[in-house]
Figure 1 (tube, rainbow, N blue to C red):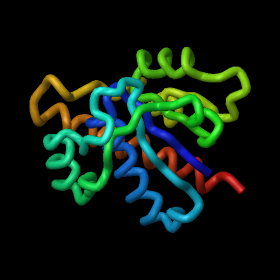
Figure 2 (spheres, helix red, strand yellow):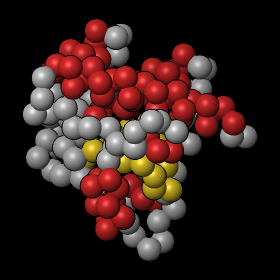
Figure 3 (cartoon, rainbow, N blue to C red):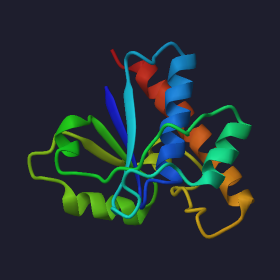
Length: 154
């Protein structure tokens, strides 16, 4: 199974989801069954590492995002991934506009898919450190849902 997490710039939310999902899947013994990656709908941060605040918040909880680099969603992603998870409604709308007619990937809103109390992962970029901690809380919840989904698949 191949999963792509998507936010706007691929420097805060989606790389956080990639790092946490990889960690949780590995801990559950599912690391070889699922490949995860992240991308942004915009191209501003292609090739750049995640925001230092996102890295610091993640590192405080045991997740290393330092090797990740920003990339932009491409039309090929809709054929290469099985599941593309958007962080918010705007990203989901952008993905639907980019989605080729013959795409194989299933699109969904990350938190909605896994039954969170909120549907969107808010963008912490223009806020303080507490925003990054809140993103971590939400993404950890969502990634636990992903792990459970993978466990339930043949």
